[in-house]
Image 1 (spheres, rainbow, N blue to C red):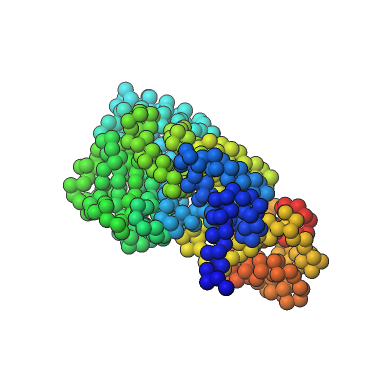
Image 2: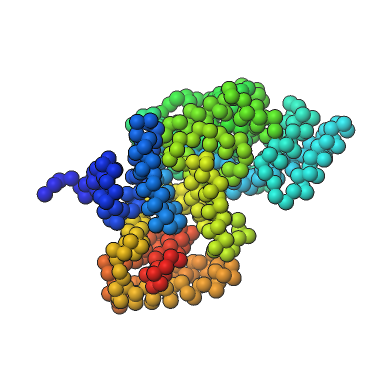
Length: 525
């Protein structure tokens, strides 16, 4: 008997099928473990897409990927993408990109609120000649219900021109003057849940031996919350900021040390001045020259010119195809970022964004349509959408990329295999499977349907549902005989319900419910 472990034989078999472009052989591995097979296929596509000699092969493999994803459906597509991100993290190839939504989770004003607050404060301090222009910009922005990034940077143009050298201090005053931020002691405070999840992701340099960790952390935010989170987690970081037209070190220390995570601020960094002085008194003067990308002219200067450092930055990081970018808290609506992503994109080398539908959209069909529209919008920029069930699930999902527990991983794998088998006809559920599915669906899903439709699934109700689930699943498994395929899924679900956070456990319960619904009806939920 071969001494090669089963997982290794599985990997070797997939490699052989891909190398030979043997679709029938690859189908065999898809039925056995679709999540692992598709995530491996993604890496193979990346490797071939970067070389002219193998680009036709990449196109063929990409067509396989598209067909399999359509067959599995969007929920399993999300599971596959999560697994791809986990592989990227474990190989030290994941670049995390943070937008305004990350800081907003800790009480920092959103981009629009920050712009409006700066305009109001600037209006009181500007000369009479400039007050009218700033007031007009504020009124125009306040009147907009829907706005784009261009509207915001255009509104700050008059403010930057009128305040001159005080522009950065005005932003800093607003940024750290918000109630929650004003009370925060950078040295002692515990970061928010999302920042703790980010700081929990370790680091290993992308150009050394592959080990789990981020290749880099990029943030478009001015604040110092990420630096505070890493300090709280006792992880060394080095900060780079755009200063006078190029990236320069903004903190003291060895920025090339192997154990140090580099945090990049393409739009500038405005830490609290007391923090900067404690780090290095001489650094404050240098930081005053930071290129704060907050106005229309600044965006044009940093994105529009061929020689701009931002273009060079995107070209450097995006052309390294093993690197995978994950955007969190980013709307990806500004033309500058999308143009850069599209311009530097290598076909079939996908990047990812975590997105949740607006809370105002409650109808499941409308939610699905929203995600479909987002996916089509970002397709030209080579960005795939990871659809989250609300932003509150982001910290748990992010943590799972770095520390997925083995039972949880097995549940995801078993459920994916079961769904694939249902849809290709290789598994026809027996009467015993139908009985189990019917009993569980009636006890764990149907009673909560009116609450979901009425939007009354409060945290206490969600918790109550999770509390009764283990007993219901155990009783059904004891009293009914299910096929090994369904029994494996339910047994693993039973284990992870007690191990996962409430948000993730609830999501896994609902996703398994969709499998039961498909067993009962033969239709996707």
